[in-house]
Length: 229
View (cartoon, rainbow, N blue to C red):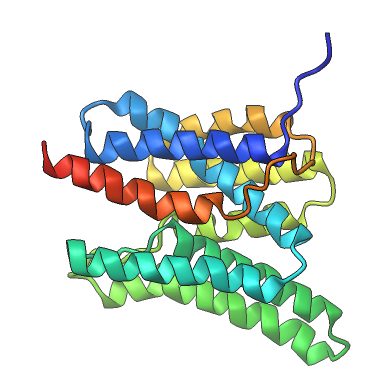
């Protein structure tokens, strides 16, 4: 029997399904924690795919601006609809991508001070936004989703040279998230199973824009349904 292999499309679909179940549990059935446990798979799967996307994408600027632009649009909607300044997952991944590209740019630069200054400046920005800024806004719900560990997880995965290293860094990130966010985050370790089956291939379907379209639409739909409850 041929071994089971999953391409990037399959991983993304698993992540999308997990994310949807998580948000249904959050907004419609908050008492049903089993839905939230299933939803823990989504973040590490998406983080891994973000790292893969940074490695393979040809237009880095477009890649970043697309995710950041959609994230900014979602934040505007959150602010006016929910009066919230909590920074969603797309802002988290925007910081991840910017950090990865800053490291790439620094490594390619011949000037030693730029090779050192650029990563330090980017890390300072990550720390400021994730750790320090919340202390300046104590009476708000401001936070960067998954915090500094969530921002750096795709960076660690990106730096992994081999699949074993990438899986090890993913596992380390999940452990750190679990220690920071609580015991239910340990269920995210289940994401290591599909990632271990990942074959590094893209797949036949073009799902490049699927997440960008699906993410805001499913949130709007679940929110509208929640108003009827």
